[in-house]
Amino acid sequence: MFFGQTREWLRELGVPGCDPDTNTMVSGRTFSDGCHWRFEAPTVNTVQAVETLLSESVRRGFTINRVTETFGLSRHTLSEIRDYVALGREYGAQILMSVGPRAIYDIGATVQTQEGVRIGYRLRGQEQLVRAIEDVRRAVEVGVQGFVLHDEGLLSVLGRLRAAGKIPSDTHLKISAHCGLGNGAAAQVLERLGADSLNPVRDLTLPMIAALRESVLIPLDVHVGNTKTSGGFVRTYEAPEFVRVASPVYLKTGSSALAGHSTRATAEQTEGMLRQMEITAEFMARHYPQARQSPSAKAGS
Image (cartoon, rainbow, N blue to C red; front, side, top):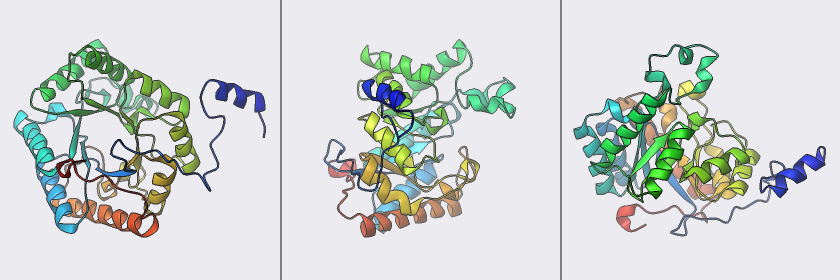
């Protein structure tokens, strides 16, 4: 193989020297409950959509383990946030909400340009960092236990605040795909800063995802479906492969029914999300039945 010395240096640093051969690879790692995978419903931005997804998944016989909101905490009333929390408790689903202030909501023009869009959702200036922390404090006060983060600096601060007891010790810090995570070295940095789960960019190949699993211990959050603004591609047949090489893994599916990440889903779009999740559950049962999905927290996971 070419570039052998560089690959050896990476291995000495604890980083994979290449994307592994995944033909026979099995992760073997699990969540703390001994299960291999969980379902995440991403981009669920209204209370009504949360209620429909969770109640209908029960009726249709599959489990949604996690719901993530991407509209932004500062764009919800406290009453709405409380309703998210209450529904999560009722159905045993983890509720993660997105910190609100970020570049796309700011007055800066850079993020609106073709080149500037690369800064993604990162925070611009110390005042936005202060406001992001206030967003978290406001949500913690009404029971939110986990957050979707788009900025490495905010992750670092929240990780240290959590360690110092300023926010609850069980607060879950999830890195969004908008941070652009795509390699094992970056994954290790985010894990050290306090991330509890990592969402890589959506179009990584199976060997690339396997390299991330070799790099870190925390769960990976892998997109099976994507909104139209993120490419719109659906990777249903790869879902069992994701679990095989990357467990413990959250399968993020349903968002291909949506136009974008700030979408507030219609009833028709919510039904489309449910259908995609139900189909993915069927594929998991058909192609990788030995992989175990975590039951709902309500069921004691």
